Amino acid sequence: MVVQPAADGIGPAAGTPVVGVAVQGGWAERVAVDVEQLAPLPDEVDFATAATLPIAGVTVLRTLRLGGEVHGLADWAERNRSG
View 1 (cartoon, rainbow, N blue to C red):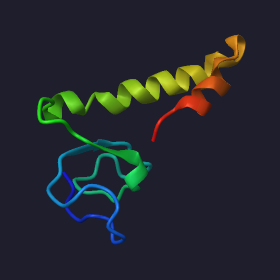
View 2 (view 1 turned 180 degrees about the vertical axis):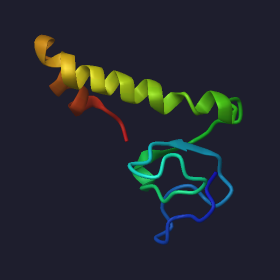
View 3 (view 1 turned 45 degrees about the vertical axis):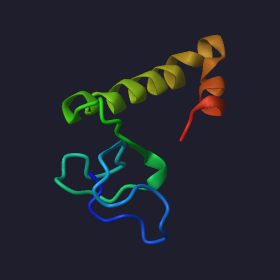
View 4 (view 1 turned 30 degrees about the vertical axis):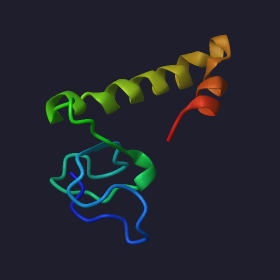
């Protein structure tokens, strides 16, 4: 949940439910996160389900970075990632 929106006005407004990846402080109750690391949480997705989304995404990205070199997929993953 966005508590304080970005000072420059980009990104989700205060009160918007979001999912994201924090570089540090992931276990904290509140953490500052770059807007590029956030995505609004759709109404149909509850927080418990959303909590698993970054884990799946990071797992895929890490797998491609580590094992993708064998098949040439790591560069493709970096070029085609969103956010």
